[in-house]
Length: 148
Image (cartoon, rainbow, N blue to C red; front, side, top):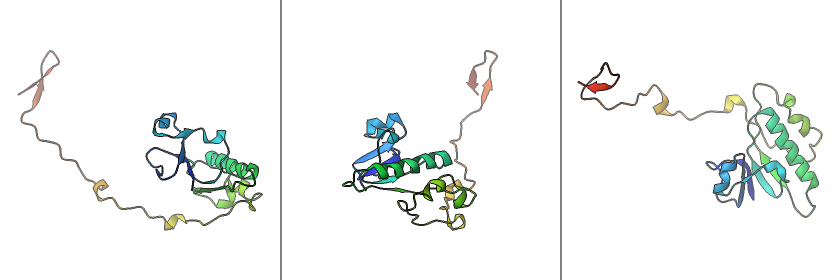
């Protein structure tokens, strides 16, 4: 991998020489912005936002980048694309995959019933104890609070 596309400053891989972010403020951390303004080249990993139109646009850009890349520059873009609540064959990005399947590979799929999230114990009805107070507050006529 040589670059990470659509990453953020909180999750990009610092071992890669380049990363693109959707947020202009991330340039202070070395991010490039506007990833669609240039071709994807080399070997990249891309994290598109899981919205059908964004995934479709990103896959289209990756395919056209590969088609238009110079023959001496191998290009591969790896993406994890979601399929929310329907069959993969009906996803918008699959309409791009089918005619370009000689350029694209489905490496695998993860079924929703196979996805398990970590059980985080402190989220289960835990209450953060607040420090106890030494007195109570009452309201005066002026609207200020005075401890009793």
